[in-house]
Image (tube, rainbow, N blue to C red; front, side, top):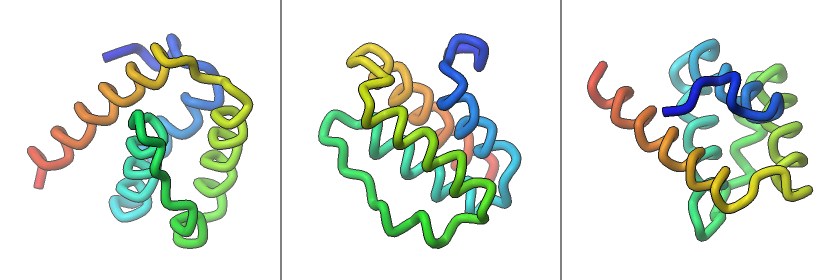
Length: 94
């Protein structure tokens, strides 16, 4: 797993949400990140409305960054691996 200092600021902003948001919001953010990082890029944009405003802003910045080509294939693969590990940790702590 990469250190947060290895990520661009737009990615750090959303990774921080995984730790700082209530569990339901963190799970929505996690699902969004995993979907964007997945090779099929199947993200559910309707989840934005369910996020707290601070989370919505950070996810919006990340999504704009992503659409502008901010993550190359290797970056998406690393983000996908990071999110897989995050989901495993979430299951472990339930």
